[in-house]
Length: 92
Image (tube, rainbow, N blue to C red; front, side, top):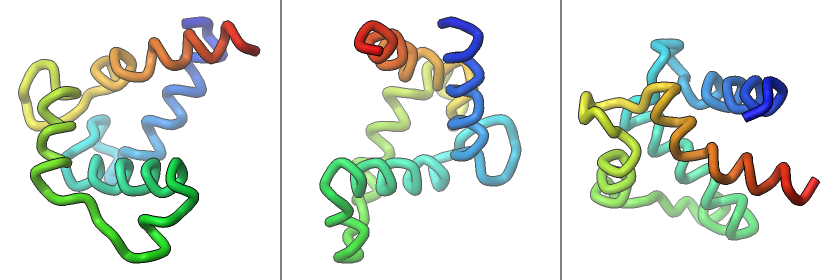
């Protein structure tokens, strides 16, 4: 990633790391998923008070938490969002 892209990813990560621990824990991940799903569904999930089931959040956590320490580090976050950032750069 280019330095500007990396800084944008770092800023997004900090936004999701509500407690400032340097990692995204499962409760924070649940918030991130509901927020992003809400945007992708035109706000419908949030507007109707629909929450993702705990098992769906746990499944996503298992995919993102590469070292299986129970949280998503910045490096793990980058592994996930990196391809999306790179593909977005191609279209800009």
